[in-house]
Image: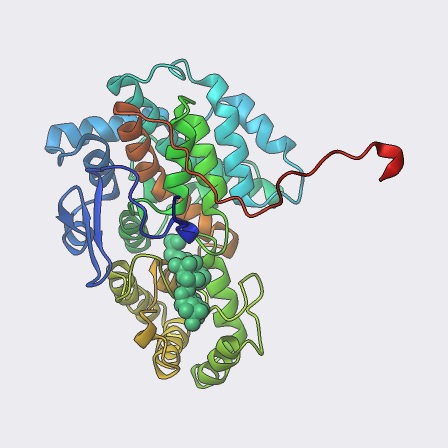
Length: 385
Ligand code: ACO
């Protein structure tokens, strides 16, 4: 009889060359490169190339990729019509999911899963995601979309399309690092959802649409927005300890989060400090100092101390990638409703890299469940029930 692995914990379903994680010591590699080295030395565009093609681009290859991104950034006018037609209460993640799904019908290479076509589709989806997000966001406030620029990085263009103003170079550069840190993370829930979908021989857009849906939840990428709510509720570093203790005891539930869970803490794989959170903590501190407002990073650090004092570290619970990204994004001026979409924009690279890998050596993914219901029941005619 098969044994039940709740939440598929510890189950290995495939081999991968995209990402390595050793959660016991907080070690993360993108295609063999340590995340600290990646965050310090590579642009998001270089990371995208690395994840898709398995090697670092040389100068000319990187320039070519920049040109491909620039050419693919805008979305067809019918996609802007879809954005206009979204029901007013549509949250940005749902807008992204809807428009990505819609765009499948505009991609001439939808059913071509050759390596070259897959690379082009991955470029297209990654290039268009910020444009979709910015247009969905602006439309919510009754504003026309801003057409992307042919120059500048993906991070720069995203900020530009949000406001229509040239973004601050430091903020654009910092967002680039944040995107790099969120680009890839092994067999997380959304990547797994994407791989499950394409393993049926469905197309890349179907896989990415599944992945966006899975990322939205607050136990996964949706946690960063809940973290901000928590920081705002705490309001002052001195209140962190009582607040955290109330959450852990179950006396208080953070809105949008499961009971007894501190948002932005804990991870299925990491039982040590998430290496991405270390970089993001430094980023949050630098952004706070630069803005002359360290309140959000100070409250965040107070939460980290309160969780340690409450014994969470002994259980292997530390801040994850979503924790310090909240204070970082907020200080950058990114609206809270776009926190998880920023994650999705970055992860588009990892999702598509995994989809390409899945399609290159595919087998249907189909686990089983242990049946615990009744057996041998006989149907009673409807008049006798
Ligand atoms: N706060 C307090 N306690 C926690 C937390 C937390 N954030 N996370 C886990 N625990 C505790 C659980 O209560 C449980 O304790 P117990 O053994 O005494 O019952 C133990 O740690 C193990 O928890 P599980 O639920 O088994 O852990 P799982 O691997 O299933 O869940 C998850 C991982 C969903 C990330 C969880 O840690 C969580 O809910 N965190 C908060 C939400 C969050 O930040 N999500 C983002 C994760 S990063 C990402 O997806 C990008």
